[in-house]
Amino acid sequence: MSTKDSADGWKAVFKAYDVRGVVPEEWDEDLAHRIGNAFVSVTGSPALVVGWDMRPSSPGLAAAFADGAAVAGADVTMLGLVSTDELYFASGRLDRAGAMFTASHNPAQYNGIKMCRSGARPIGADTGLLAIRDAVAAGETRTAETKGAIDERDVLVDYAEHLRTLAPVGGRPLTVVVDAGNGMAGLTAPAVLDPLHERLRMIPLYFELDGTFPHHEANPIDPANLRDLQAAVVSEQADLGLAFDGDADRCFVVDERGEAVSPSTLTALIAARTLAREPGATIIHNLITSRAVPEMVRELGGTAVRTRVGHSFIKATMADTDAAFGGEHSGHYYFRDFWRADSGMLAALHALAAVAETTRPPSALFADYERYAVSGEINSTVTEVRAVLARVEAAYADRDDVEIDHLDGLTVEHPSWSFNLRPSNTEPLLRLNAEGRDTDTMTAVRDEVLDLVRSPE
Image (cartoon, rainbow, N blue to C red; front, side):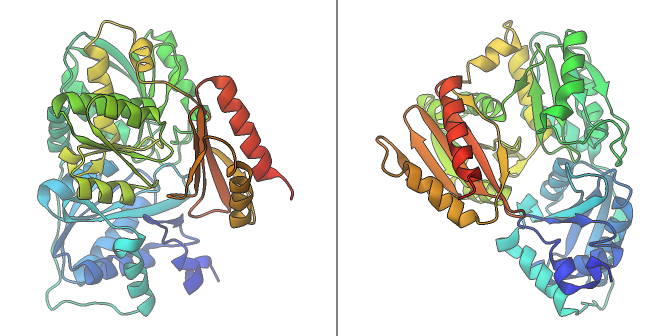
């Protein structure tokens, strides 16, 4: 019996923010059909948009989901091959619920569904996803008197035009290398950037849509997957390099030296641009983002609001505070003018616009937004998560000038350094992010925490 044939097995594909698992071992088109039907039953959505990425299993899963939704009475517009932020655009522009079939940066054998209500409002564990799971588990199929209609629509041109209005790129001519990783940026990057050809020369890497990822994984948070981009930026003497994950909702930047730019740095840069346009605006940052971000936001007259890691928390806080922009250290960037949804391509346009507006080298521009040495995220496998967190907290609780909080895992702050240690939502891991006023300080804190985490006692 396969995993998907047992209730406990298929339920495991319902994660904190989406559906995700190996196809067909953990879920398949039959389950996708039932999820589509349950989606309409739970949300009451009369119409929805459905899109998919370049993975071989995506079209079949999307078609099955759409039919299940239509059986429940909803009208379905099939968008075809899209990036996740293009799906959010369609949900916002057409005011329809949405379902995007993608496993983002995961290997080829995985697939998943990112779902939203109309206006790109997120659906997560606390906002309907578990209710959809439970409706599937109940085994009941909702059958409307009239089956919903299924049609097709291409929104790529409208999406690209909308993004360019939100972050116009002017200034000096630029050369940019774009690594799509055989993911959906291979479709969206030309649509967005080619019309800028008079001032932007784009050099493509791995634009062929191929869900088997023949060149490298479409996961640019892993430094190994940036090497081809870094080499190309240097050899082409480009101004900038852009890397996207599989569904192109995350963006990572490489400067003219071939050096990776921290997502916290890009968050601070976009925050500054936002505050220049909207003085006093609220900016959201998650708690593993460098503290340079809130420091700069406050210095520029804005309001910095910290939130937990995860898009549902960012989007909910943005709605509560009417924040103009939000950034996560994982490479997700959220924009109020984009229905509070995340868009890697819009973040890329902001980076290009900022570089084009100055004659300084990009590395010098980005250095303006960097104040601390950072460790990057370091994972440790642990069996007793709570016990390890308690041991680490006890080691720092009585130190001078230390503040501790538990917004998301354990955060310890000192005037010269800080770290966050938080459990994974899906694996027996603790994730460490540390930073310090200089590299030596950061390294000392990082190594001390890792020794505590990985100690056998």
